[in-house]
Length: 359
Length: 271
Image 1 (cartoon, rainbow over the protein chains, first blue to last red):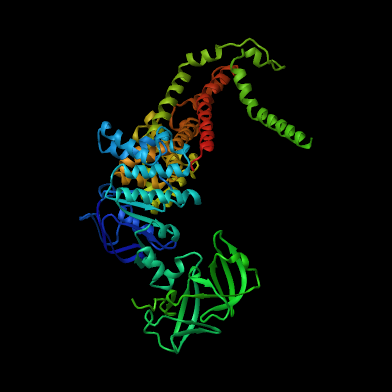
Image 2: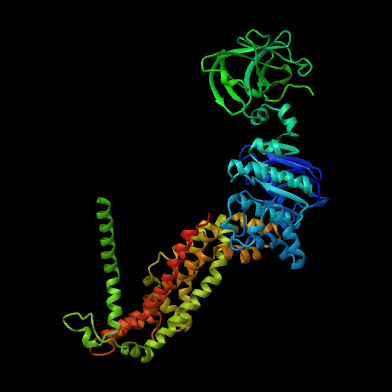
């Protein structure tokens, strides 16, 4: 168990900087998710903490020890890879216990630990098999068992669920979360799947182009996106964006669309100012036509998602979508009105992309 | 019906190809067990009384026996040293020196561009000067060029196919580079590496030209087999056939192993 502190981390390949001056503090016991699109540097960051990549500049401290130049094996961290990375020439039991056997720990002590992790992950029937005779989900459980048995200070997960099918992914996600609640080991989990990040994290570090775009709890990231990029990246269906101009009375107008913004959230907006509005489909509701602040358009497409449906509409030439459980009554071409609570409207600076909300 | 005909057609074609490919070998093997008079009859004989005389002649003949021994020593030593030097070099090229990998790989391959005749003559001069002409050591030395370069050339892709994550997982458990190579890369790549060694073995086992030019008394089996025709006034066909069988046997056995290995690799396939 340990906290992790990264100071001014720089990583470059030749002249190409991949990570430019990243600062990050992870308290003990926390489950942190590095989230971002491909190539944002999240895996590189994880691999530097693991010791698999050299750090070009900066310091990494784990549990009070400066590990910046230590080899991976001396950092007290364990890692689970996307490709499982099991040793194909060893049985499952040998895979799990290799690290302990290598340290010269007595077999009598290893056996109960193996039994414990195997029981925890449901691997008892497979201990004598070779990895290639296991399914993907089982292989990833073996990889997790191999990481757990060492009781490391930190767990690192590098997109561990990306090679699994959707159902299994969900199941293992829950298991990882439960495991963390039980063991409370500081954990860093890398993923590009925002839903995975939202469901599993204590805290999300959303990265873009080698920099931290926003850091916060899943709620903060979802409800208070700091930039347009974050707002766009998080949430399914994706947020609607709309360029508008501020008018008197804190009203943002784009053609026929007029939305009142909360003066307490956006006290500094001035009439004439250009803004980019962000409207979450899930925060909008069907309403009778003519309701103040309602958007009215024609239905372009209805996507059935089971309990809810996403309705894509054309509002005055802008494509806007919202979700509603009452989607089954709507057909393509229908006129439909929907409204959003002013407290859920986001506004971003069109140039910088920063949120205009005052905290 | 059409399917059946085409299936039969394919089988017939395959059978013909097999006969064409194996016919000469089969005839040689048969000839090795025939008396001379059974070989030189105008009408080829398929039914005859087999004899082991030809093999006895070979194994009693000191030249051939020495040739066999020399071949065994020269080939096994040069393949062994080639493996000891080439396999670790290939791992370094595949993993730690990727930047230079392509250049080194090309250099290694370029060693094989040169026709052996071109290097044979300078080698004679150098070897005569150094006093290692007509020695097994000299032959091993020149074969090392072939074995090391072939092993490197074939082993680099074998190590590249070892998933890097496996080596990284081992590093996470505290293994140093040498331990990772020994306990993970080598066992995981072993089937492909074995194939590389077999191929290298066959390559030098069959080598004739350099052995012919660089050795006289201490020649290898291909040289001896090639010179058998001058053993007597009558061409000793049976003996030639028997010598060929002895010469071909090790490569055939190895190629059989290689095929079996390739098949299991294709079937279980690295995922």
